[in-house]
Length: 233
Image (cartoon, rainbow, N blue to C red; front, side, top):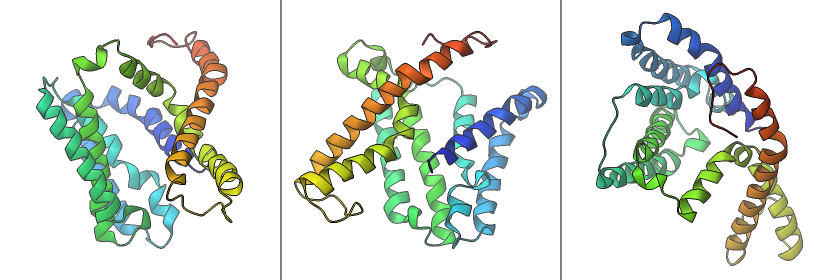
């Protein structure tokens, strides 16, 4: 699965960060994410754009979002008003829009555009995270909140199985029900919402099954060796 490259970057971070936390004085930790951002900027300039995977999936070029997460973790606790949270969500969406369409990030058009696009994705993600931290409404027992919490619980599976769900959705709908001639044909018209609902539903079903019968047993096994207890499965 090609998307596992991002999981490998996370695992590399989990491997090295505890040692840095142990040996770097707390008052100097803030320097580390700034250095990580600088490394990413330099790496994206040095690596060749025409070799797509060298930039898109390279650990050194994708440190920005991790660095932003570290900076947020180091921040003092914020007491944001609802209007501030709305502004952060809008800012996050604007950042992602700029990266996707203003910079054409996926197509790696130029060093200038990726130099703006990658940080924009990281800042947008950070804005979304800040918008949710400490929000009292997220602690309610409403069906919407419970549904979102459950999606968060199975989010690893949602990420892992999304390409499979997309492929099966196109295979069944566009080769079957809608009679498209190719799996690469982009969904359009009346078939688009049907395709989205089907692929998303299948993705949730696969992720839920994976969590129930694959991930949860390993999480329970982990409890026997964990030195810092996590929440119950």
